[in-house]
Image 1 (spheres, rainbow, N blue to C red):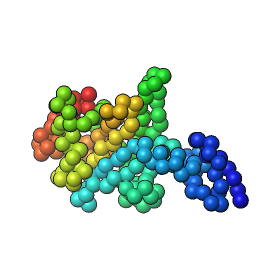
Image 2 (cartoon, one colour):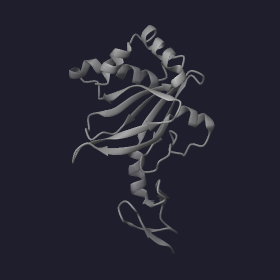
Image 3 (tube, one colour):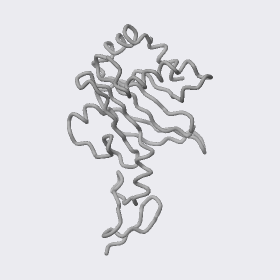
Length: 194
């Protein structure tokens, strides 16, 4: 029987009997800490016109790698191509506030970023982006290029840090579609994230 301790909560782990995983630094995480890391993941929703579907991915900071919608590590080139996140880390902006800083892979462009919240009456300028997010989740978009909406935790329980991402080569085509087909200017997108 090998015993060890969770690097996060220091709970004792029997490596022969208990569930455990390794974090990004090859330290042991117990089942509860591993599950909590997955729950705090940065979420990636990527629309693909070739597949005519939206793929969902998770990138938990503590684990430092991407997972598919079933929380399985991704290995295929296709999944890697649909998932633009390279890494993420928590940044403290004060003693009790912070946000997730997301780094994107080379070849991807952040069109705009900011924060989102629910569909509340006092933030009507955010509704157009909420509608775009609903369209991507429900696979109701007709965008001719792949694009991702990436959301991460902040210390504000009512908002998520959000970025709209495209491949660098597709920026102009995406912005043209956004205006001509979706009816949202880049300025409106920027405003919806403030």
